[in-house]
Image (cartoon, rainbow, N blue to C red; front, side):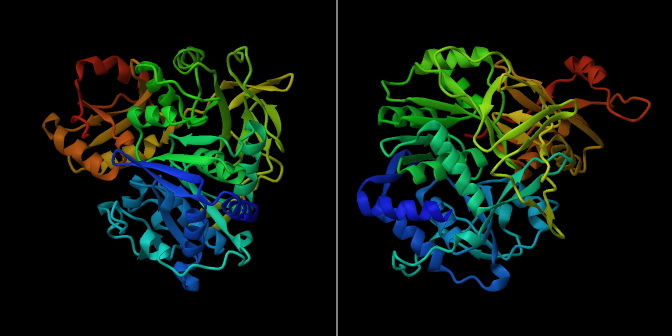
Length: 483
């Protein structure tokens, strides 16, 4: 991470007025130059003198230049940062791990730059806004960076039913950015569009850190919209990061205007051959998959090439990666491995010195990794992992619900959707859905099916095949999406 801070100061000295971050919010674009961004980072590093007990902070990141500056400023100051995206439903869940770990301060903002939101109203932390940090005194550019002591935490779905907080050193995050820069040849002339949250590993490492390290301009969207993506493409974006859902939406829409896109990267779920073909027809270039995890960083990637990659192939090993395709699943080691999980009792070491078990079934043929089966514990909604056990727990907390089973079904477009079979009076549909909306992110809210009972096996497990066979007679209920 120190290398990133030094590189940014060099870019600011060489091209002070060039655009470092371009952000789309409320229908308009706002530019932040390299000189302005470095100044904001310096202010954030010294703007709030956090007491020792506040050394670990919970940082809510929106996709804005100020969010980038606050994150990098905190890391420059050596802080211990837990990153979550704006409107993350875990902030409002009393049983979430975010409520149980040792955190001294919450940093977030609304559009006015002040900490708000009912989801975080009762969090027992000292509270700061972006503005509190960014109004700090400007440091001298020559002050040595201290990011070598900083750590970055990101929320992941985990493998035990409830999410876990993955711990990385700031140096590991910086190294991951350098790997993206190397394998995808990011250059200062590039403009890199993130259609994903910068709080997630793909957006933060593959987009923000790699882009700023290379001197490329970063293009951020406060919320995804095809209008904003088309505007960014028309304005000269050369690299785009998205999930398979993003490319499906692009492929289904009218073609974008003439563009200079040279590279389109996809992560967060498998990219089918049909979708890759459709996206290629729309964009005029092949989308390249990136495979990895929050714990390990990038594992494999597809270098752009003329011919399509074979079915199930996710690419070749990224620099610093070794792997083994064992019968129980893929085991990897990377140069960007996490150091452990932050839990209520402290940090649990990763235990990954001899490799980390991804859980996906795989084979390796002539240096190419093929995924032959994926772990299916979680529901993949547009590249975001939804924990069905947690959704079920929250649905069951409604007093009218006697039993519930949460599962995935494919939509007509091929994307997974969250469904819930609920034993409750059908007249409570609106109240149950409102209950879910108050406690879950929009993409987590299930389509509710009312049933009189859940078919179970002799061992008490829900028999999904019997349940699905019975569902056609139970009408799904879900309130219309709010705009």
